[in-house]
Amino acid sequence: MTLEHGIGAALVLLFLADIFLTVLYARAGTGLLAPYWNRAIWAGLHAVAKLLGERRRGLLSLAGPIIIVTMIVFWAAGLTLGAAMIIQPELGTAITPSSGQTSRDFGTALFVAGNSLSIVGGGDYSPHTSATRFLFLVNSLIGASVLSLVLSYLVQVYSALRERNALALEVDLMTDETGDAAIMLARLIPRGDATDTASQLGNLARALAAVKEAHHFYPLLFYFRFSEPRYAVSRFGFILLISPRLSTPRSTGTATARSCNPHRSHRCGGARRCCSKPWTRTSRRWAIVPATPRPSGACGRAMARRQRRWPAAASPPDRMGRTRIWPSACAGSRWSPGWRRRLATP
Image 1 (cartoon, one colour):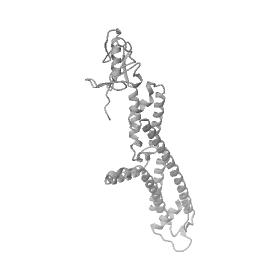
Image 2 (cartoon, one colour; image 1 turned 30 degrees about the horizontal axis):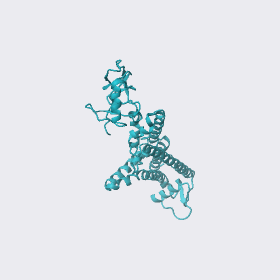
Image 3 (tube, helix red, strand yellow; image 1 turned 45 degrees about the horizontal axis):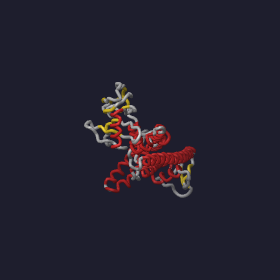
Image 4 (cartoon, helix red, strand yellow; image 1 turned 180 degrees about the horizontal axis):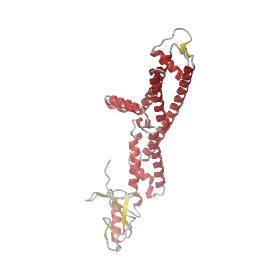
């Protein structure tokens, strides 16, 4: 066994380990060569896209398919190169053509290695010893196995991409193609009826978790991007993550308000109103939100008049930067407004 045999065998084993960790182990960042190769291709495409100006989105939208094709070519070239380094010393002795003289250059070795790795086979070169016959058998098994694994891997990657795009399109339609989480919550809570809101948000959360896990299984999904903003992972991910915060403030503690006279108003939770229900103190992000206040007496009539003045809308902010939210479901009948701090625009 020569040094060229050892280098060729080590190269074949290195690429087989890279294929195993990328396709079968399927966790982000575990490959030996493929992650660095994909990042290099992405960096090259990104550098070229900077020179195209407004057309950069069109080029970057092709990054995913280009990286897949180049990665397959990279694996095939590595396996062929390693097999050629093993075969070249045997040309002319253990591996000979059916007719004519044997060429012992490296190009011929690459040709013989490629034929031995392909499932089709062919070529005039054939082995004549037990070791070379076993080598050709192993090469054919490696070629068939790698081809089937890569094809199944591509099917799974594109299936996960389809599910990600379907979730992005669903979220975009629920927001009326605006990307506003408040509009989606208004659809999930029609006329203030939040009976099915928790289950619907739970279904969206499970779909988002499945998309996140798919990106860990198939890191190639990170390189798939589209020109339409609706398919951006950052867009629908932000909408789904901010929706529960908008629908349910995080509670950090509770306190009970003093009992009040229905005919005498006092300050309860920062708002001048009559209340007899406990109120909830929330985190710094939110101001005090009273729990289902019930207006009564003169203060209730005053608040009802204010509601008619600002139906289904938000009143101007006060000196502390707080805005009173008027739910559309409460207009004209009962009302349950609450003080909330204005959220900063992301």
